[in-house]
Amino acid sequence: MRVAGFGFRRSATLASLAEALERLEARYGSADRLAAAESMRPTVQALGEARGLATLAVPDEALATVETLTHSPRSRQARGTGSVAEAVARLAAGPSGELLGPRLISLDRCATAAMARVAPRDTPAGDTT
Image 1 (cartoon, rainbow, N blue to C red):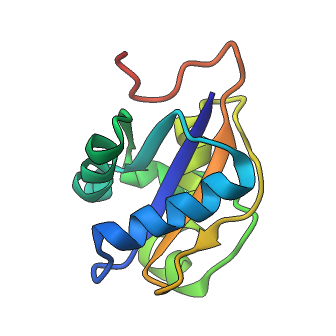
Image 2 (image 1 turned 180 degrees about the vertical axis):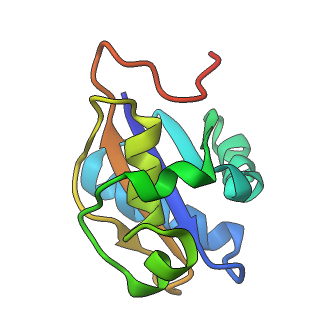
């Protein structure tokens, strides 16, 4: 199972997230679930509903506990992590989940998305299905 995690600016639109997801899926294959930090969930959930995908939420305070592949100073200052998208994807994929690569940035530069693979024995965080 693959989980797509998102990070985005307040100015991001649903189209920003959709475009980031399309670029991500072109590289890594289809996402089975979407994920967001709890405070960012409504926007990602709207994308999930449009795509027929469940949306997982991870606690905002957990973002700083995850090592990421990329290191944005802006993200570090705002959220305590080098990449919100990468941190969310890893957290949602469970303790043995692994990032498939660094985050991808939407063409309008308002959203980022990263994909993680869930280990077969792990259940994604917040998954109630």
